[in-house]
Length: 79
Image (cartoon, rainbow, N blue to C red; front, side, top):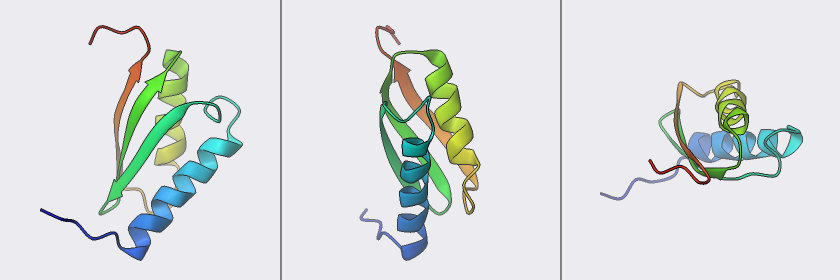
């Protein structure tokens, strides 16, 4: 089923990505950000666990974010 991107959804995604760029720990990581009804889903790969944790913290701190689903995977992880 196709889900339209609302202005609010697009704004949240943009704000999360902008916050990632400004954060020294997560700025260099390749993380995909998707938002639906205030729920932000993060996916991609990082080198260190603290990058994954920090990405979730940054996303959760954005106004309008109701929850964060962190599907980021550590490089080299078998799971």
